[in-house]
Amino acid sequence: KRRIGVLTSGGDAPGMNGAVRAVVRMAIHSDCEAYAIFEGYEGLVNGGNMIRQVHWEDVRGWQSRGGTLIGSARCMSFRERAGRLRAAKNMVLRGIDALVVCGGDGSLTGADVFRAEWPGLLAELVAEGELSQEQVEPYQVLNIVGLVGSIDNDMSGTDATIGCYSSLTRICDAVDDVFDTAFSHQRGFVIEVMGRHCGWLALMSAISTGADWLFIPEMPPKDGWEDEMCSVITKNRKERGKRRTIVIVAEGAQDRQLNKISSNTIKDILTQRLGLDTRTTVLGHTQRGGAACAYDRWLSTLQGVEAVRAVLEMSPQSPVPVITIRENKIMRTPLMDAVQATKDVTAKIHAKDFDGAMKERDAEFKE
Ligand code: ADP
Image (cartoon, rainbow, N blue to C red; front, top):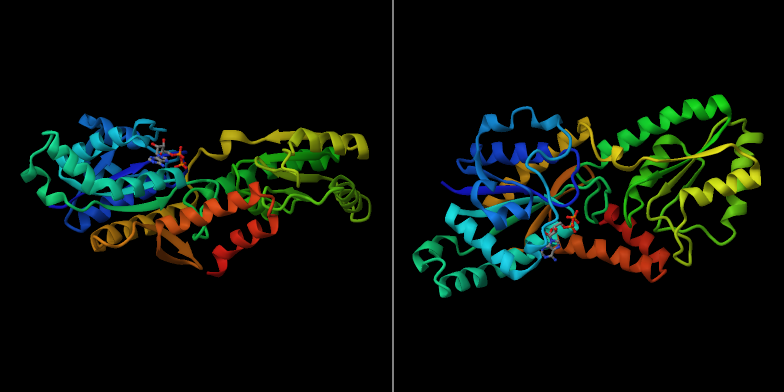
């Protein structure tokens, strides 16, 4: 029977467990054996009982659970060829030549590197006498498929990453909670949300909560934004009678000179210029944890099933695919195209080409 491994890597995200469950069950359904690799690439490099066969019942109830039950890690040794050599040996010894990796762009880049090196790694293992030619013979091609697990929604080529809607749900709940206080005391709240270099989660949060003002890295405010923000907020409060003011700040927010715009800076502006009683709330890791929302259970299951299909249908020449969702269709996209487009946005932000960065982010919906 064919053996398919599954691992979660990089930052954890709700829905990763749903993805693992779907991969395990679809593998078994497809007459394969499923193996969980614990602690991300760490488990692949170390082998032993960090690679374990899993059965249908082992993943029961996993769909709703937050975090990742098979663990995740930042694995330095997998970044080195020597680590990947050990990983290849462990996989051949277990008879695993297919892998589904659920993680962010770093993890998926690692997966791509691993596949490209695979024939060379096997040759080296044979040359060094670690494995015999007969042992490696049946495993000449490594089939890898990526799933994007990240609360940041920071991968190009997919409308949603596994985890981002759970995080958005949590952010909305938190904003609803502070709304009550803000309304009662006519206060301002500055709320910082995660996303690293990416503003998607903050943008989704601002739209979903009807925020007064938003800061994202891709579209830094024009110089003089302090005046404009204050005038919009004053209008909302005085003319429109809004009792509470909400400003959402992405953790990567910055101005046009790439200076960080922090939640405290905004709070000080609102306090000093408008005399508004303003508080900051940094949501931090509460955005990452907790049960997966309905959408992430749905998405991770559909994508996990598709990942196994993709593994079984991959030809030796085809590039590593990542499973995406575009306009509600589950699709396969060449992994490195998506990773490269993601990197291009960040590069454009660093080069202060903000229009280009916005166009590039927007492009993922228009492809
Ligand atoms: P994320 O997947 O969330 O972007 P990281 O960038 O930290 O998180 O990557 C997670 C792990 O993936 C790293 O600890 C490392 O083991 C592996 N990895 C990342 N980039 C590479 C790379 N270029 N080559 C090999 N492995 C990598």
